[in-house]
Amino acid sequence: MVESNAYSELHYREWCSPVKSITSFYREKGACMETKLNQEMVRELWSRTYNTSGKPDWSHLFPYYHDDIIFQDSIQRVEGRADFEALCNRLSNRCQELRMDIIDLSQTGNSIFLQWEMTMMFKKYPSSTLYGCSKLTLNDDGLIITQRDYYDLWGDIFDNIPRFGKAYRKFMHRKFG
Image (cartoon, rainbow, N blue to C red; front, side, top):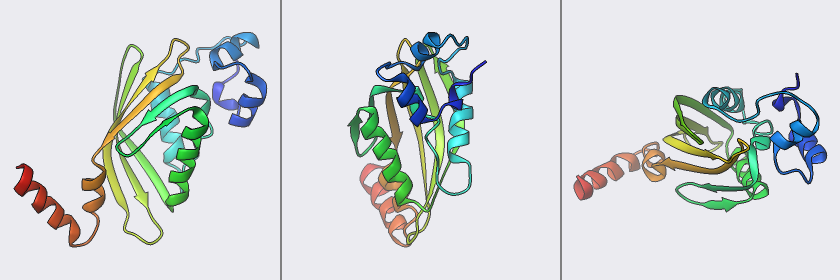
């Protein structure tokens, strides 16, 4: 039996072009396996990505993203797998170390929800922990076609800046209750 993560991103691009679906690729090669993502696979893949020492390695995840992926979070929206991969690489380059702990996972149909804590350790600044969740939407082939990340970017980062975090929280409490 062939495992989907046994092929690196490079092999995937070389062997699958112009095939857009990893499922189609394996059917074409005669492999008998379930390639659609589910919450157990997501937990295993994401845990392997982030919870190693140092910087994350997303190469085994990229084949599960559709070429037309739409990614959006609090500060940006990118379309296409090449731009998404570039975004991931920029994040990795900014951080000395990056960790993600998955708190909870659930799946309903083609939607997978992750609740997570991501800790970014910077070279010159204090580490910051973001608390958030992601919604992954799968297409009919089981590839991620949209990913929407939700988190409080400013609050979580400001909390880690000495003296500024308390002032920010006081302001938010005074203005918004």
